[in-house]
Image (cartoon, rainbow, N blue to C red):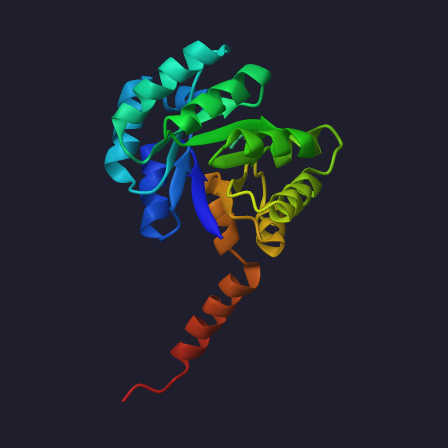
Length: 215
Ligand code: G3P
């Protein structure tokens, strides 16, 4: 499974890269706002740091505006793909951008039918927001399972990016389902590496090592 990091924070991106965990990056307006930096500075830094796919989101709501924004976003780097919201206008923008050879990531997907439409429009990536579905009492990972089945049924090339990941169980389930990509916040990447028995084990080895006679 490919790991994208769900952040616009350059320090987090570099720290995750040091661990070999960054195949790509996803951003959104909320994540950009959290950095306190302007959008252009943020995106430029990420493009200079990461070779893999980088999602940058449009703010427009009509096809023409989204397409114009997308054309500008891809000038920042060839690895940039354009995040488009899952709306009727968004699908039209995805269709236009696909015809122009511009890669897209359809975001804010909450149902299997939305996922089907995103693939039909030609999306490169489709992002189901699992945590936000869990928040309203739905089962977010069920959507991922449905999407993978639908895309497999019809051989769609659209890759599923499991998004709005909140905890390690989301990652484990995504991997078991065979999701193409999980986009994971840095804090969750750190959690994935941890186990209390690992820490206890290290401590015990250190203590026992002290009992080994020195020559
Ligand atoms: O990848 C989408 C993500 O940034 C949204 O996460 O936790 O705000 O639902 P969250």
